[in-house]
Amino acid sequence: GGSPFGVDPVWGIAANKLAYQNSFKMKISIVIGVSQMVFGLACKTSNCVYFKRWRDLLLENLPEYIFLLSIFGYLSFLIILKWCTDWVGLEKRPPPLLDTLLGMVLRVGSPIEDDMLMFPGQATVQVVLILLAAVAVPWMLLPKPLMNWADNGYVVIEADGPKEEEEGEDEEEGLVKERVKKKSKEQTKQEAKAIHDAHGHGAGPFDIQEEVIHQSIHTIEFVLGAISNTASYLRLWALSLAHAGLSEVFWERVMLSALEAADRLHPLVAALAIFVAFAMWAAMTFGVLMVMETLSACLHDIRLHWVEFQNKFYVGDGYAFAPLAYGPTVAAYKAEQAENTDKSQVARLVSVTSRGVSRD
Image (cartoon, rainbow, N blue to C red):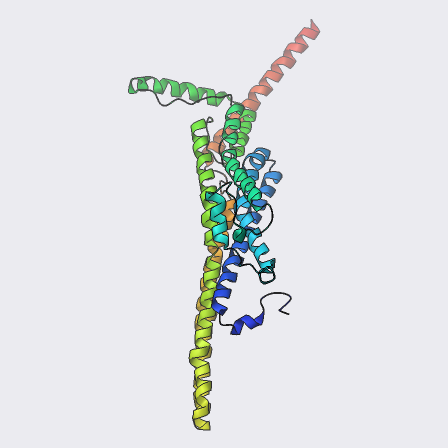
């Protein structure tokens, strides 16, 4: 029998070695990529639970799971099923997975040919998964902004008025400033908390148009990104293929050629040729495979973590930058002192008045 785990070493000397290794590395790259993206969604789930963002969890994170797993999770399942099936024993040619995925999307509800069938009930399962993916898109797009709009009283911010109204802007601005000055500290803290809970959509009143645009961008990015990000993980296949090809070329063209030529040369010349060939092979292996290839793989790995993985949960809104300034701090301190002074004067006045009333 073959190797119980991993790749059978006999493929290293097989005539169709390259075709087999290409197919295997391409498929395992997709499985690794989908697994990491699902882990990214799990990190988003953890964030939603930790910060108690139940609306984001149910109206954004859950449909993301459904869309990603119904298409690319199903593709990963087909890859593993194809690996685990004894096609030789079934006397059947393994169906190409790309044709299966395209047929699932483009021929919804059509019967599957016998030579393309991988398990019983496959057509029904694919129809259900496509319907779930189709439902997940409006699920991500509409409910969240509409519920946020309902929480803010269905208020619609109108566009700026005509230029004739600019004359009264100064007066209105003055009134607004007076109202802002009269607000208590407690109200200001509540407003700041509300702005922070809005996840960086900006200070000010709620704008349904801005909210819909923001959610539309997120939905489009996730749907298209699920396709492009999965394809981006194929760079793992390309890097592995390039590394294996270079190592094989270096060994065959340099070291193996010297060993084969040693039989036809004088022993001293053969020893010198093998020494020089080994030095060249070791230098190219270290310089190209261990330095340049390692650097290239590190850069691709960082890109996959930053773009394909972290965009599933990392938002980067943070907090608005507040530069260090003593003016507002001093003004707030003076206002607090004046308020305390007024309160103490009122308290004294009340105490004096109460004493006078008690004497009478």
